[in-house]
Length: 254
Ligand SMILES: [Fe+2]
Ligand SMILES: [Fe+2]
Image (tube, rainbow, N blue to C red):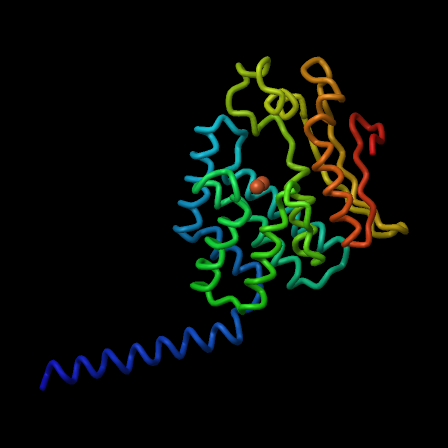
């Protein structure tokens, strides 16, 4: 008898829990800055980012850890905020930016798809509305320029530009490899990189200002690596009804 009652209680609780999950799923948690604090502090998210970076370190790739996730998410948020998109869109871009590379822990190839699937589980657990989860997933899938497809959504466009513009010497793990590795050399030569958004000109402008130490790498090397990234950034900017300009050492290059 005692057992039955506790079993029944368990079943009722489960029904309440399921109802709660379904309800949250339909309504969704509000998209606030508090939400991204919850995401940043989520243990699963921390482990995914840590291990994605470990995997890429083993491959000899540049830094893709908390620093990269932080910079990309902040810049994606800033792009949409400064271009006066709705605040909800900017929050979704922040979330997509923070989670876009977690799939690297399962391999570099198709990491954009893996990141999207892993993000889906986390965001469902946190109670986001399905339509917002899908926007984040599709933004994450679009961030790889090789994909050649950018879903026409400001969230994905902002994420792509923020991701491709993160070039900086602090991403190089081992400066002693500069001679052999062009990616390391170009990143290490970039002593600063900054996105400037101009909303008061027509067309609106997103400018990437990079300072390169030409003693370490030539501008041509930057182009060799970043040409496809720059053209993807230009296409993404057009979704945001903006032009994308690249400046290297204060000279407009593209
Ligand atoms: Fe990526
Ligand atoms: Fe990235």
